Length: 271
Image: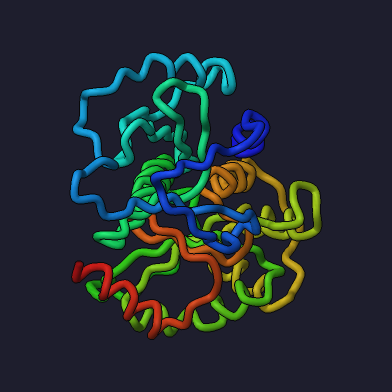
């Protein structure tokens, strides 16, 4: 999807009345830019909903991304710009359908990243499509669970192993860890075969621990969700492991110690 979107753009138009700032490098290694909505006493940048026609935008979408229906086409907070959503992929099109913008839109008055908020909603929706019984769950003691975190994991990843070795700490903090498979080396690799063997084991918890301890699991094959998990990971923007997805759809790449993770979850819950 992202490759298709990039290929559809010959160049990005600079909006003279908006402020652009470098966002650095995203977790996926792709440089992005930020569209920042500046203060304006005349509210030149904000358009009331329902005043722009999206027909030109939809015509452009049918041409550059044929055969796929967007989840949302909606007027953005920046006048004359439409927000287009495909899952967790978001970009912007001018109302005439001519100019496409990629990057995050930030309201400098409120400091809200409007694009990331929408992206989080998209991830949440996609994560809800995953059947619970396809995940490997490490669950705190009865009545101790406070939070649930989905973790895309690779049995050969060092920080995935470190996170798993500290599983007792996460459970003690009331955090349920639900594993999804994301062998970074790809289908057919040794890591892929190992993680399939884990998912096909009678005792998935013990086999996951064995594999995370750098031991070779017994080779098994069965109907399994590994490819499905890998496809989902790419859709929501996972590029490395471990990758943590919170219940609201927020994505946090990398290992986080249990106490720190609990603090982050407490802060999110308090908002």
